[in-house]
Length: 144
Image (cartoon, rainbow, N blue to C red; front, side, top):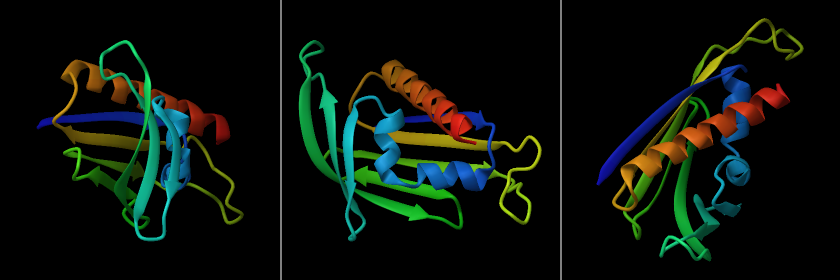
């Protein structure tokens, strides 16, 4: 199983950053191959994604994965036993807001994504994580 980890700084408070990321429905916003994510009350999600099994032809697939969100620790874990795949996301940084909740100063947070998988080319996976993190930063900074 290959292990991958990438980090980015987001120019927004950690609570704002994690608040956005912890909503599984936002995953397609920054994971380009994901088309839909439907969270369920039992801690699972149904994911619809596009894959290219032969490297050329796109195929839409659907699967179920587990998802755990720890609001206090600002951490998420997910995975699929069927596909030998698991990952985690953590957000660190100070919560910088005034009494009314307005952002003060130049608040920053750090987002780290880690992934373990038996499938895919390691360089391609790392590049995909980098693109996902860049999309996360752009999306959240546009909202902050």
